[in-house]
Amino acid sequence: MTPPKPASRVGRVSLWRYAKLFRQDILSAQPAKLYRAWMAEFRTPFFRSYLINQPELVRTVLNERPMDFPKSNRVGEGLRPLLGNSVFLTNGETWLRQRRIIDPAFEGGRLRDTFAAMKAAGEAAVARMDNAVGVVEIEEEMSHAAADVIFRTLFSIPIEHEIAAKVFQEFRTYQRTQPILNLAAFLPVPRWFPRFHRAETKRSAKVIRELIARLTQERMWEIEAGNAPMIWRRRS
Image (cartoon, rainbow, N blue to C red):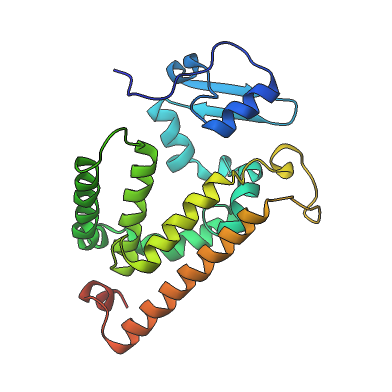
């Protein structure tokens, strides 16, 4: 059974039409047959992309041979204003070093410690949707739920917290500016060449980074003072 989604595009379209559909939402830009393929290739005059639906291939790319399938710099160009040189965008030895730093957070015991916070975020998401009136934008709701999980597990605050809510609002703004659609995402320009990101993209990224830095600093102070939740005091 196919889950509900926006209608797929019909047949082939021009690159201009594809870009317009992509700006609307990525699902509408793809042909219906793409969702039935185990692996599919998409070619443009500027780049090629591949979509994998077969679980075994996904496991090969992400788990078994991640170094053979580095992250695309084209996608990274749109996310770098926000994520910088983080584990989400890096490759090679830099990525391996960053993964070693964060791996302890994903050990079995640590996940058990944070499960209650994840469960609370899920219950809050269900309650919000139960109380919603009219058509519900599920992508926004799922982004809301994911952000709630992040803030509850990392900072012990729900998404309704003033700073957490502000981060989420700014992230939605960042998404709406469509930072992935920039010159370097289509053409292999040198590092010194301007990316021509929108002013709103840069502003939102700056605000989000400042807010996260503030939350991180406050959590460090709480840990040092012994006022953080027990889960954090054990980890420190």
